[in-house]
Image (cartoon, rainbow, N blue to C red; front, side):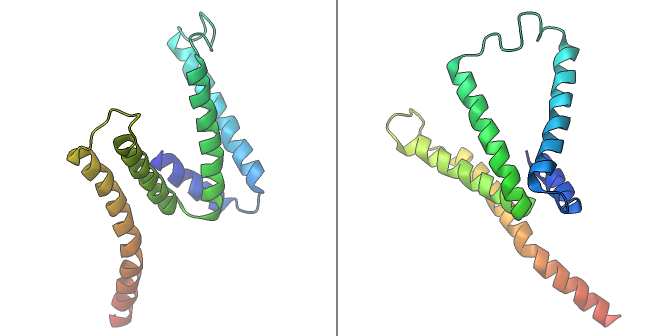
Length: 145
């Protein structure tokens, strides 16, 4: 997800003269072709039909991922991939707390899981914060020479 966001961000900025819907259509066509090639390579996917075994829950997850992907690309067209990754990591933290706090989920608070999510959020935040400091340091070094 992070690599894909960074690459999408790079190419969406490189081709910003194209409308968003054109950029997104081009990416989705390439992804669809790639997924189809992978599905033909394993030999078992098409024997019983591509959608064999899909339950209503699987269709719901598929639909939610389509919505997530489209909204992520819309966010990437406006922001950069680092901010998108901070948002996704924060969403994971919110979902984790919902799973722990809501009575319908059996999950209990676990410090290692919480710390793993926090490490990701704080690492990306530190990277964003250090970017301007590094730029200022490079400018200072340039002035010294």
